[in-house]
Amino acid sequence: MMMVPCPWCGPRDAGEFRQAATEAIPRPDPGQATPEQWRAYLYLRANALGWVTETWYHRMGCRRYVTLERHTETHEFRPAAPEATAAPGAARATGAARATGAHP
Picture 1 (cartoon, rainbow, N blue to C red):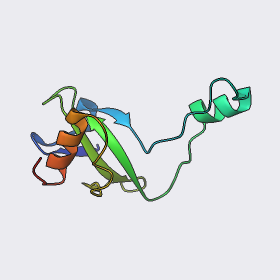
Picture 2 (cartoon, helix red, strand yellow):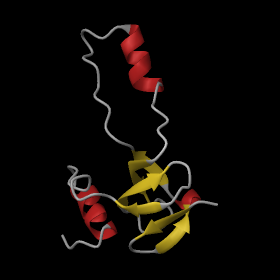
Picture 3 (cartoon, rainbow, N blue to C red):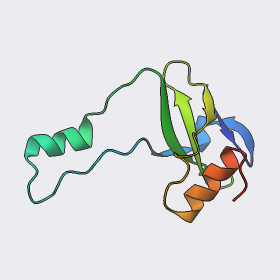
């Protein structure tokens, strides 16, 4: 069982969350992208071993966004780096700031 640390609700089962985003992947230009470029954008992801930055939505709890870092082998969580929490969108930025213990 993977437990996600929600800053408002405490540690909760990952089934209560929806993974909203991972690290940004640049979108190809729709007017010039080849089918291979679209396929790579939509389906091919690096399966990195180590820490990745993810945004989770607590859909069955406080309904807030939380930005965290997760280790892909151990599923250990830690607060995201400050530059990762400065994402656009008030809900995400507020959730990220609280996840790291910072005050908005």
